[in-house]
Length: 383
Length: 257
Image: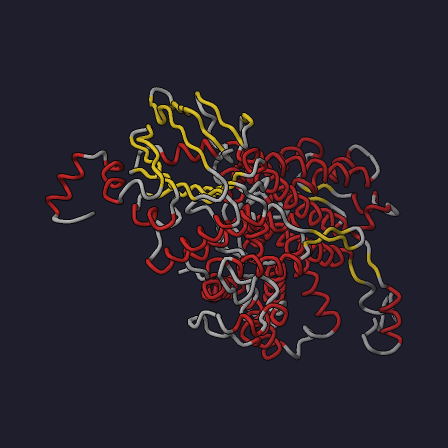
């Protein structure tokens, strides 16, 4: 499905062409390369970039600092979109992603600041709790046979409520600070809050390729001092999920579980296990997001991650995935996240009214979905 | 020796007797048609054969040895493959991905075990060509295939994975004339490879076209098994419908139904 170029020459020898069905139109290589699930997102990305080069090209949006700005925002969307993407392809939703972000962040803050434990233990705790809740979500969906929409909607409220309650119970407020200080020198905290390739940017600044601060305490230092680990996580998760989905047996089972669970069961695919693991992966991605955010701000807040579940789903749908499962791509979801980030930050650079962001986003969503539906019908022969 | 033999199989669902003692067997290289009207118990019977249901009474023998299937997986491992009418394929996925679903060939790339798409695609194309279907590319979605071709992919898959007995659940009932003959030709090809085919249908003409033996089910009971040449299409039709009533109806319609 995803390798339009392969085996064209090895299998289409002269022996076959004589008996090829005369009603199957021969398809040009170009068309085959173009007609893919991500096509809608690719067009959307090009369109969005052209649009912002035109209206905000001179605002610094495409200078080094501006690029870093929207890349960072896009990477945030990408981290949660990757999880939502695999889960949606497996045929399920997780509406508790946003609440999970708030919850995991608060767990880190309480364990590290309130209990005074090392930050790395706090992070491990957050991941353990999140994975357990993800598994519980999946188990409930499988065992009750209820739509995941309902089950995870319940957890949207349960987790948000628990987050606020725990936070007030331990600190009498909904924001828990002091994580930044606690995380100083912590090896695992660096994996989420650190930056890499700092020396590369010093070199780039020395070569006058990127700007430097010209006054203040950091005068002479490059304005970008490294790639935040958040971006590294986003790229790492995208590569992992893409390879998992398109190149492994398990990936084939993800498609099968979402495409037709019963048909998959008949040929021995462990559908329940696949779905539960995907709920856990979504929770994992939400916790990566939460940890990066806590390390960036040095605090946790009970209202973090609001509406993130919908933003993740929007990225995935813009990327060409089918809401009912069985179809989609990680590359598409990543492009969806890029579109989302560029539009959000681009309108800010362009000085547009910030409320227009939602109008713009809704419009892109509709256009992308219409186009994706059209493309999907061409690929899968749906009528 | 029969590939599979079902002796006096009964299946009760609560107070309902779905199967009241059905005996049936399949030889290697034959196509044994199982005919019956809606509600005759065909589906229950093949689900028993393929391990979905456990029989309430009666014995099953595979190559002479008594077996009890706990799950469809057990039946598959014993070489009994079932192709269900609607659930054969996942239309959104490629032919290759469908063909290998659950049994994907993997190759090691360092620590990673990835699907060996080269092998998977090549074998898929070969197996499909043996069944008389030339795919444009193995990565086209199954949804772009016709209903008959989908059945054929499912049959090719079962054969490739070593099915000794192939159960086809109404493979022709939703198909047009041309596609039906393609599927019937596929059944003939499979039979010639020494596989025993169980062909479930309620269309007498389709059964007569490929069947070696015919068993008619009616109201959960076998009305007998006849070999090719021993029975006419009209008699089969009458047996399926329960005889008298159908004859009257046919008379009033002025021809064969």
